[in-house]
Amino acid sequence: MLLLDHIPILILALAIDALVGDPNWIYRKIPHPVAIMGFLINKLDLFLNIPSWSYLSRKLLGVLALFINLSLAGGIGWLIQRAIQHIEFGWLFESFIIAIFLAQNSLYKHVHNVAKTLSVNGLASARISVSHIVGRDSSDLNEAGICRATIESLSENFSDGIIAPVFWYLMAGLPGILIYKALNTADSMIGHLNERYEAFGWASARLDDAANFIPARLTAINICLTAIIFPKTNGLKAIAAGFKDAKQHRSVNAGWPEATMAGALDIRIAGPRVYDGVVTEDPWMGNGNSNVSPADIYRALRLYCGANILSSLCLGALMLI
Image (cartoon, rainbow, N blue to C red; front, top):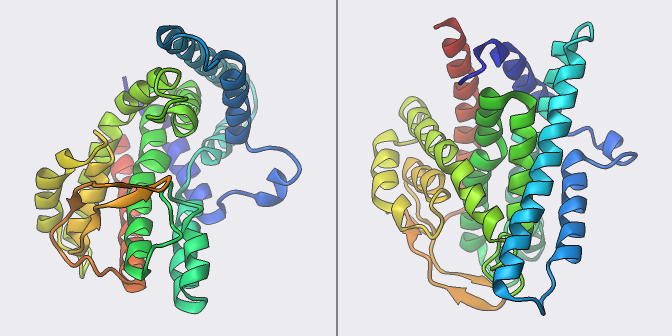
């Protein structure tokens, strides 16, 4: 059930995150909550994921680790939500807490930094810059490869870092957004199909897929609607690419924002890439130009900003309805 009375708090949180972003001066003194979540997941991994144990044992212990992780996150969220109900201007405090778990500003800065670095400092520096936001090997990427990887990261993280936290906050308040961030952090750390994590990270990866199923498609709808409105973007191609290419992606969710972004910009992204020295033959998203440039990153950022504004407008309309 949607918490419609929380929408004004959420809109304020989106505005705070968009304008202020992460206050790094605070996180130089105290760890970011997501870093604390990562610390817990790492300890559970070291304590419970013993390579010599059987596949089934590690799978069951992965379920236990996920239960501990999500229970703590949800419990802390519930306690904070209960506490702020008794605080004057608690709604303002809640907005600041929500803003901590949103990534509008930081995602924009990271993506913009890649484009700027590529234009000003050249290929070698841009390879380092893009390595901070993608998981693939970036050491041999050419300019087009760096730009494609950057736009893919922008598209996927728009869903994981903004739309999904908003969705789960609306569904379950502070416990919902904290549980989602704990789950998404677990998936990014242990939800990998390799020898160490195939069993232990199975539960985190599968539940993260389920948690992002609706948000990924909402993100695609948002991108398509924004592309219809914005100049120099193509909403019809975004829709066509979504239906044609999203289901070919190796992820059940990531293909939707990536394909619609590619269609909206009339470019091609994804395709073959290298992970840990191994070439992965992933399908292309979109039917446009694959020779992507920094100018396309800036176009993607403009579309991203428009889509964030549209999200807030839709929330406002939902509140009025």
